Length: 459
Image (cartoon, rainbow, N blue to C red; front, side, top):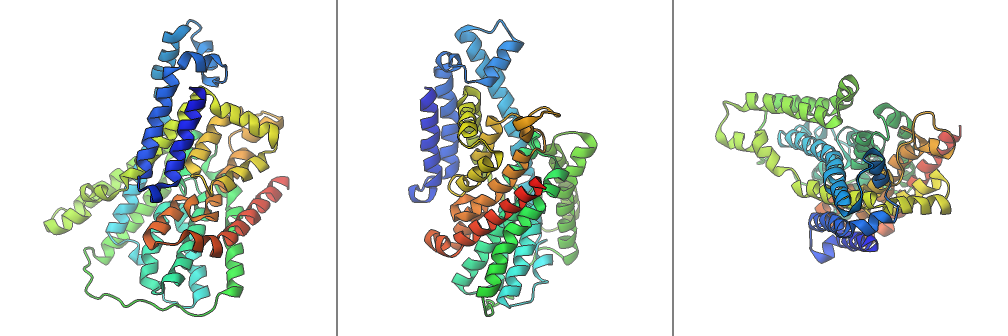
């Protein structure tokens, strides 16, 4: 069963990677492996735990010396491990659910229109730089998936030619992933590391901002010498109905972005988990929304009230994270991740090489389980730890570099990140086209940024 758990995970992961040809939503595959891994674990608990690879079982026995035999092992899995892991997973899910709702509220109130109406240029290079830098910073404030969705929607209003729009959308993916890597709320993986205590908000910003910026600017500089001409804008539909006033758009944009930015402040002031700050921000926006729409016609209420907006939130994505994080938790509890950690340490032996390898792998495999796996493989070292394990203290070199590599490595292939998958789905970008036109630029930027981070650390 120990090996069967890995087989279940690999097969399920293959189904997730082949979501489009199989026509099975990745959330369904994730939920299956999330439950089946735990089923296989508890069905053969005695054999698996007696192998001695489970660190958490050893810790449990130290706390409760009387826990022996099959009953004790089942108690450990059901009443200790699952409860412990579901608590950690719930923090991430509540954070994501609240954040996605806030962004959807801004979008439904056309808050992003305040930004998009300011863009006038049609020069390809100027527009590319402008959109990429805008995406880079928006991604840090919102998240890379949401920013990509917003920017692709914007591109449809700015670029009419399909292939040109593909190129711009692909660069948006690079910019969104680079921008999300240096912010504690910019990417699901940095959210996971931040909530898990591996990184702190200020240190991830100061440590990873420059490598992330280099990761984006290197491809942009290359394109500045190769791309020429002007974009053709599509015809504007003057009949499109507006449901909000300019003041309401500005108010919701300010409240939404302000609420997202308030979360790190909330955590610093209260020492409560970040998801509580996000829920607080959502609560404030909800109350304001109820007040400003209370006397409006039902047609507007049914579109703009939070009870209507929340139905548009991408629930399958939340369920995908629940499934995949549950599966990784099972592998962590049973000990497979400890074995993987030992293998990497023995064969690579260098935290930089390990982090870069994880980043390259994230272009093929979703970065969420990779980072979840790394978090399970490498416990946070105690402050003041010296030697090799010092790399794994809070804000240690490994965790910061992992945030960069896992966040930006996914850009190398269009299926390697949530932002890439979103752009691919929205614009029907061809996988082979992306591989030929964009992958080498993404790899160049990724390696340049990694080099900058290693130079920073060496200095």
